[in-house]
Length: 189
Length: 189
DNA sequence: TATAATAACTAATCGGATTAGTTTTGTCAA
DNA sequence: TTGACAAAACTAATCCGATTAGTTATTATA
Image: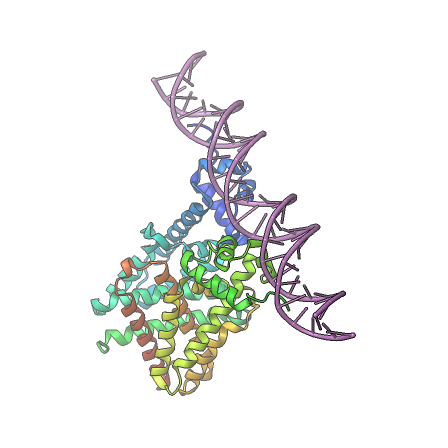
């Protein structure tokens, strides 16, 4: 198979870098082609459409985050594991704003089962505690909502001048973890 | 002043309805003009650009949510007030997916001080409790992250087939409120 | 080495946002 | 009541990016 300078991964890398620079909504084929030293129409040998590329970028991001979290959790357990998973997610979102936007915006259509690598990891972490099974689903959604919500707001500078943003994030994570302990003790419905 | 059939508010109403139908990213002047019975270029008498319209839609949405929350809180206090504020927000997001997307995505640039009507309300609610002032900022961010994050994920069907979505949301709200009580008692740093 | 498949290229099309220039119409002062 | 102005709509034209059509180059393999 010919002229294989480019592959899907290189395209996604370049697209991700570009999205990080100019935001996912302004991502365009002209600049992407330029970055890859080809002409825009040539991109169609690798990509179905601009919009489809955006959703592939979503999967790419989730894969990366999932991998990084898995790495970060080797030999770690308990509260510390949850805390680290959250930190890794946040760091990734902060370092890759454009890719993160893709992850947050292009969840739709249920096409991708990938996104839930993070979910699976959080689930394992919860299972290691004696939290009622009935609460699990809700808790996972709570954590995920917080993580993505906070990252999104921070990204859009919804909080005045990055004022202690990281501290707020950590505060929230600790707050949630403290809530988990409350559950372990067996209160709550 | 002539031919004032249309005003900014009617435009935003129509744009909001259209965004709710086809999503904020697919919002376009052709369909908007059609809905208003004018030609696309005529829209420029009311709007700077499509992108600017999207960000105006953001302010419009925050105004509406703020108003609805204010209404819902008349004569209500304590946990119930917080709970209702959260419910109203969620309902609005669910009923107006397109406008909500605008609110979530177009926070950027710090142009708008509007969005924080919700924040101000939450703040008042927290002040009514004896929660350390130092925690206030973090808590507000936590709540806002959860609200927007959950609504966004639900909107994008990130949770398998709308499975008990509303229950999860309420669970999360109660979980957070319970955490507030923990703080009142004076634990925590 | 010939061939088939792949991927790049150029040229062309399509469609939507935006601009230019013109016309219509409602308001208001004389 | 009317004439002038301003606001807002219209049509025609432009721009630009995504996408398609059709062609050419390249490389792995038989």
